[in-house]
Image 1: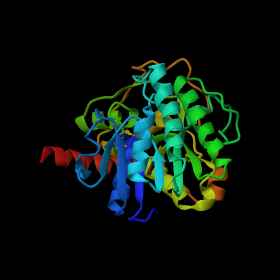
Image 2 (image 1 turned 120 degrees about the vertical axis):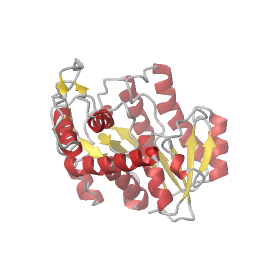
Image 3 (image 1 turned 30 degrees about the vertical axis):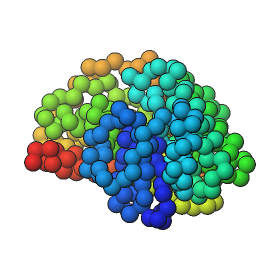
Amino acid sequence: MTSPREPVLITGGSGFIGAFLAHELIEAGCDVHLLLRPEYQTWRLADIAGRFTPHFANLCDTEATKRLIEQIRPQVIYHLGTHGAYPSQNNRTEILATNLLGTANLIDALHGHDFQAFVHTGSSSEYGHKTSAMQTADRLDPRSDYGVSKAAATLLCQAEAFKNRPFSTVRVFAAYGPWEEPSRLVPYVMEMCARGIRPKVSAGQQPRDFIYVGDVTALLQHVAATPELRRGIWHAGTGAQSTVRDMIETIVSVCTQNRILPEYGAIELRPDEPTCWVADVRETFEKTGWKPKHTLQSGVREMWKWYQQRDLKKAA
C-alpha cells in the first residue's frame, strides 16, 4: 500500500476500474489525484467528491501533461486512461491517440522525476485469438485497433522497464463489478433481474475469464507496492474459463428468487468470437503471491450487494 503522504495519480479515474481503485485508495487515506477530461461522467465519483484532487487535462497534449506531472509529482502512477474498449468507441485516430500517444506523453513527462511505480493497465485483447491459455511470452497478435494500441503501449512501458525504470503492465481480462458501464453484460442482466424483465442476450457460448474488479485492483496495488514486481507483465485473470452463459446463469441465480428465463439468442453472436479466452496465471501467481479471492458466484454476490445499496441510496 502507498503511504498516505505520497501523492498517487490515477489516469482514467472516472472510468470503471479507475473509480473503483480511487474509492479504495481514498478509504485507505491516500492522497489521490485523478486525471479527468472536462466532460467526464460524474456518477462514479459523486460519493467521494471533495476527497480527491481533480486535474483536467488530455494526455495527448504534451505540454499539459508535463505541467500535470510537475504540479503533482506523483510517487505512484496508475495508468488506466484508455479509449476503445466499448463498441461505441470506434474512432481509430482517437483510440491510437489516447492509448499510444497519451501513454508516450505520460512517460516523457515523468523523465527527470523520481517515482516509485508506474502501473500500466494492459488488456487481454493484446494477444488476439489463441488456442490455449494466454501466456505473457505469447506473440501479440491483436485483432482490433484497441488491441493494437494497447499492445503498443505495453511495449513502450517495457522499453522503459528495460532501462531499469519501475514500469510494469497488468493485463486485465474480463473484469466486472461495481461502477461498470451500465450497458455492459453484468450490470445489464442484473438491472433486468431487479426489474423482473427477461434480459435479451446472445446464445452465450463466448468464452471469457471473468474476474471481479476488486481482485484486479488488489493486483494493481500489490505490484505498485512491491519493488521486485515493478518491471514485469502480469495477468489479472483467474485462469478459469467460463462462458457468457455461465455468467448470465450465475446472475439470475443470485439476483432472483423466481428464476427469470433470459431470452437466449435474442442478440446475434459476433462472427469473430474466439473459442478460447483465458489467462495463464501460473507465472503471476507464483511470482507475485497474488491470487483472486472471488469465484464467479462470490463476485456476482458482491456486485449485487453493491447494486442493492446503491438502489436504496437513489430511492432515499
